[in-house]
Length: 340
Image (cartoon, rainbow, N blue to C red; front, side, top):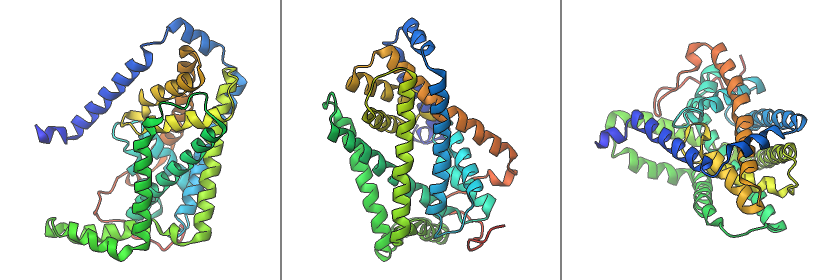
């Protein structure tokens, strides 16, 4: 039985079960006639603008990623955008495999080492978390209509602070980090140890951006700018539904959407919808039908276009670029940042 629960089949089944439960929770209070009326009232012009802004945020992600990777290699925008699109498209599958496929796709296409690229995704997620918290703190500073019910944020906040601490320690106390990891590797089969040592050392190299203050400030500013654009996109979607909400409402909804996406359902199915619905109804008193309609379109805007773009890049790529290297496995040789 324990082996079953660790299997890929069990993980997929649990992910789909979670999605089904959360979708049922999302829909249980919805009156479908009112939901249809809310969807039919949408302003097409504002909706198109919100969709265009949403697509642009993935381009901004790719630009930020090229900055994060500067200590590893000089990566052009298009390969970074292609890998970003493929990764987000793959996140529609159970298990969020896109978080691994994205750096693997770029590593194969640019002949770069996989582990520092994977580490850059970890650093990216930390920066995303900090940016979301900054904007949510601003929303709290200007005042929330209801300030209760925020205990849901405690665990993610603790996790993010811990992740920041671990990353900073790994970079600036590298000798101690490697000494600790050596204790871990010593307990594993001897034949695996050389590969894991090489992988972990290269992985820490992916955090090298932190050692360059100017580059790190650029990346941090880029993260805040990207999340500001994401909030603008959400605010424009509110306009599409004719909701008279303050701009700070987008910060709150975005925060809860991110929390929803932390639940391991394919493409945030169900978890994203429940989170957005809750934020709008609880904090701003938006009717359930309208809040549900916003959640449905916000999810579609965030996932459908980038999935189609990612699939296009995936179909156009050679088969070797799609393979995902195993942790500790052999990596492509770096070309020291040289472009093809």
